[in-house]
Image 1 (cartoon, rainbow, N blue to C red):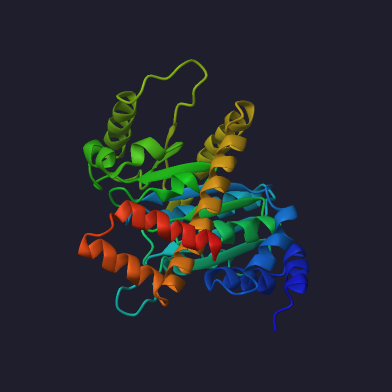
Image 2 (spheres, rainbow, N blue to C red):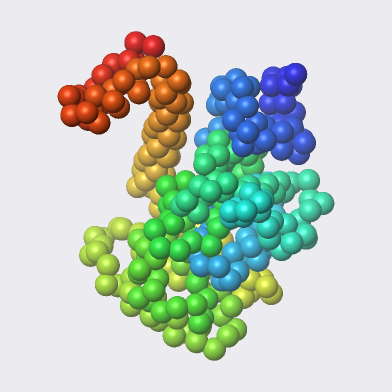
Length: 318
């Protein structure tokens, strides 16, 4: 038996084991999940969420570790949610972030949690929104979300973070490739990592040019800055934190922070509702209602739209 009230109380006290167990409830969609989320809700809405994304090999884990160090120097309590791709064969994940973030393993003010995507596309795990709520309620002032290496269209982090950081590196493709991947539209702050390599200045110039080709901005609109770093040596990381704080201030000043969080909450509610509907449809597969509708559509005696209306009516009355 899981005592949810005790777990929540211990998580609020900052006990790592309680936080870990709550996130496990989220990942496993445990029966106690609804109770846990209801208990955590009054304590959420305080953390500043920063998403880091980019192609594999640009240094996301190393940059995340460097940002943790920078925020700890500012006295902030930091949570890290690192999402790794799942193996299509074993279902497991190579927890690369744990390899890169050993410096923070013994810091009680840093909580690092790895999550596998478990086949979910978009660069994040399906359980990520609820896991963020756990870290928020546990008192993390800043939460860093490191996504899997994104490819084209895998840019879900834009909807899950207050500020989205896009990392690039010299030799990882030109500006056209960045535009194809869809990352130019989601970035609030751009970081050219491994800036000690040849081509870093050219990458920054090309990125600046590509950003200039986007939509015309009005006075007062946010212009994404481009920061060059060498995360492995901690160079330029303080400048990234400064850019993040400027973006946070802009979001608050223009009311965009609250608007982003409302959109995030709406998407979360919709996802939960759709999951519940899929579960109910799955239950209908076991009786004769859905198979009967399918037989009639296949025989041409009923059109699929009317059949869907019948199915929805059955769901609402069940």
